[in-house]
Amino acid sequence: MMFKVLWPGKTHDKEIRHLIDSYVKKINRLDKCQLIQTKEAKGISEKHSSRIMEIESYGLEKYFNNDYIICLFHKGKQMDSMEFARFLEKTSLQSARAVTFVVGGFLGLEERILKRADFLLSLSKMTFSHELSRLMLLEQLYRALTIIKGRQYAK
Image (cartoon, rainbow, N blue to C red):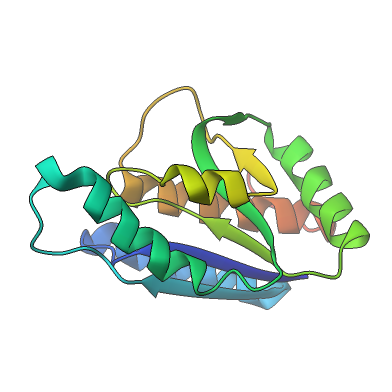
């Protein structure tokens, strides 16, 4: 499998950034995973949220290619870790395309990005910061790959 994980801007919290780097390394020991930090809309007041999301959307779309797109979205499907692993395994078997996860910025994802998605995934009914969501997605991706490959992972 080939995975890409996209999000706008850098992760500013250094502890979260350290954990993200750690999970990317772990994932790459099991499968190929490319982390891509796209253009973040800077210097624009939050009252211009549609402009911010538009700028960030264009940066994300540049990397879609013909990939299988999974967007994180609060109204997406929720799965437990075993379901997520089975879903990824099935998706990779049915498609030769790379699997690309898209995480929005602090305002989320623009509607056109969500419509472009092949699948909408929710990490939880709870709301998390976009930086923490990045980390949680990578942890779940790593957990899913260990399940798929039959490796032991702490519960």
